[in-house]
Image (tube, rainbow, N blue to C red; front, side, top):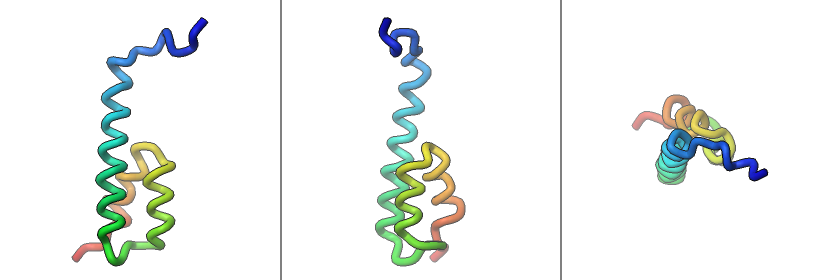
Amino acid sequence: MDILSGVNWALIAPLIVLQAILMVAALASCLKQEETNGPKGMWILVIIFVNIIGPVLYFVIGRRSA
């Protein structure tokens, strides 16, 4: 039996797309910023490895206001 056969992709696909868009936007923003609140390398790891919440945390806490 295929483990993915019971997955409702109509519900999961939008979350995967949202995660990808947030991650790309947060990474682009982080790489453009000269300074962040905390080490830039740490924020890159949080953005990549903490699904959906990581990019949101970066936008709320990590970005420095100009």
